[in-house]
Image 1 (cartoon, helix red, strand yellow):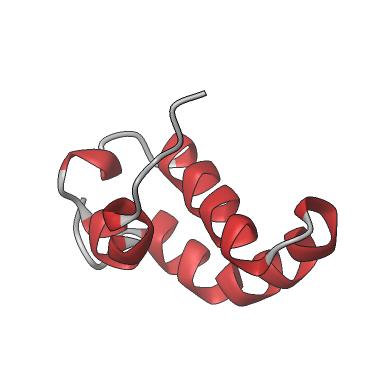
Image 2 (image 1 turned 30 degrees about the vertical axis):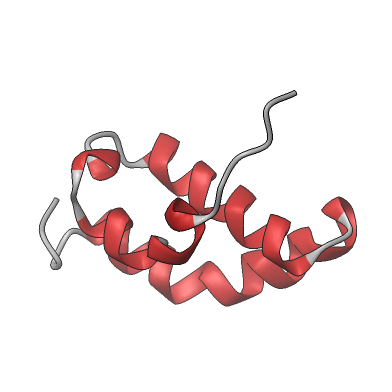
Length: 68
């Protein structure tokens, strides 16, 4: 995905508002950031394979996942 992709611009323009909206729903800002990032990855197929979304959410990708 290119940096000039309109889906990336849409995501970046609204990311903070989406995280603010999701925070009280999920109860935690870091989880809200993950939810918003996951939604973007689903919205913009191909972003998860090293495209622009990988740069946007590098912090979340480095966090260990729980084995439940």
